[in-house]
Image (tube, rainbow, N blue to C red):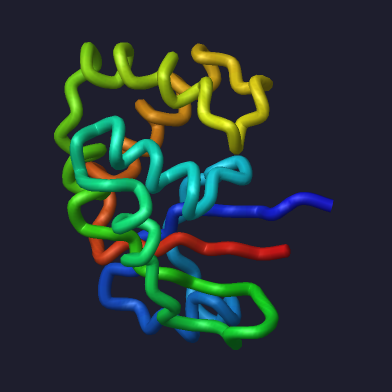
Length: 135
């Protein structure tokens, strides 16, 4: 069984209510792309060091020991993805596809679709944004 991840537009919604499904919020399926993968993407986009970015995902809803969880997403990562031009994404996708966490199985075209979709989601929805993780 894999890890399910989504980008979530919280807007003015209470994170705990979103997590418990009491309140619906717009989501973008992240297909198992989690903290490490997003942090490495951020580094490739120039948002900062991947280790430092990974330390900026903070728990905002959920029990620490058992999921599901909602985590903040580093502002620098969000900003760099929201403002990335197609050419930037096209140059980053092949590099991102080669990270160890994808195990050599990531297809550049699939990652490009993810990047463009995530960028559109972040642009078209209201922040703050969170990463939802469910085991």
